[in-house]
Amino acid sequence: MRISVTGCGYLGAVHASAMAQLGHRVVGIDVDANKIAQLSEGEPPFFEPGLPELLTESVTSGRLRFSTDVREAADATVHFIAVGTPQTVDGNAADLSFVNAAIDALLPHVGPGHLVVGKSTVPVGTAARLAERVRATGARLVWNPEFLREGYAVRDTVEPDRLVYGVEADDETSVAVLDAVYEHAIGLGTPRMVTDFATAELVKVSANAFLATKISFINAMAEIAEATGADVTQLADAIGYDSRIGRRFLNAGVGFGGGCLPKDIRAFTARAEELGRGEAVTFLKEVDAINLRRRARVVDLAKSELGGSVVGRKIAVLGVTFKPHSDDVRDSPALDVAVVLKGLGATVVAADPKGLANARARHPQLEYADDVADALRGADLTVLVTEWPEYVGLDPVATRELVAQPIVIDGRNVLDHRAWKAAGWRYRGMGRS
Ligand code: UGA
Image (cartoon, rainbow, N blue to C red):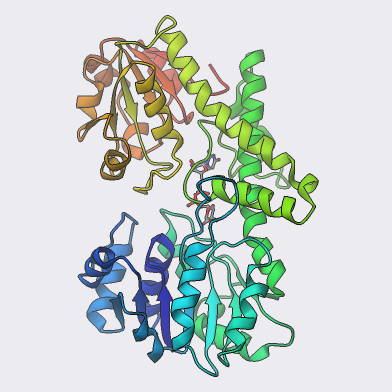
């Protein structure tokens, strides 16, 4: 099939590459000329495991090309919208200006029989609003939310755990077209659900709201564990054995961040309030508050471990990205902790295998070390806030030789606390001691 993908960020670049690898002819469109130049050379403008290979293969095969000129979308018959919907600057709602601009630019090049497929995460009601404009061109609209995780984006795109198509009533033609696009995944037995627009939009935000709630639930238990001497990691293991609960997304720590979970729960709350149903999701404000308290907890622990003040003390911050296997620092708890500690007067030296360029661009006031040993050398306190395997696997004995004081805050509860204590470290976890 001939496909266009508007928006070549984490979502669109992976989607375009994966669709080309599956045999479709794809053009990726983005307004950012630098991004398009890089992608055209087969170089992803961000770190995502597996993407460089996929991109190079697809570009070399001739099935994938990139352009800043939306007119090139006219060759395609299926048009994906994969632009971002960040939080608005002055509120909690989602900023739809990129979606609106993408639709405005695309529609003049869309014709009868074409399909416009929204993948961006949008407030419920958006698809219904856009459908009329799409229909006026003779094309149809489908809302097909994306569930990929950064770090596993390629796998999640090629082999998703489910497909959701939000369509207008009885639009079997659009369903058949999308089935052809996703023939590979459907052939693997991937569950595929056809719903109305509102359900499809809500599936996406409610999935992220559920995941955020699960994380904040265990972080709330961490707060109770801290007051009682209990161990939240053992608690999570024990309740996780109940298959109705499940162990995944029950890792207590510095909390969730990134470009999706935090802004999605806020946008969901804002939309529910607009609909007069704010009460139904009031709990999401608590989910957000619990999450942000975990960042403050790490800072408080740092202060108390350093005798009440961090002023003039060297703190090694291990990790700046919102999670490992990504270079994304958007709303990163790790980077937030580093910035607050620096603001309180500490000398913060942060390390990260992939995130330093993005962190530097946002927070040039911090010191960054390419080599983790440089961050650790002479540190009065070590704070692990992103569970990169290279930090989880640090040897506590060798690491002790580098630091000035063997005190570690394990903001992700991933270190072998017995081994670290045995090596002479004072260990502080999150909801465990
Ligand atoms: C999330 C969802 O997991 C995807 O399904 C969704 O498609 C995506 O948002 C999106 O809306 O595009 P992602 O933001 O890549 O994916 O990251 P997650 O793996 O969900 O992790 C989010 C945050 O939660 C990270 O900061 C992670 O460290 C934190 N987390 C995760 C915990 O603190 N504890 C856990 O047990 C799990």
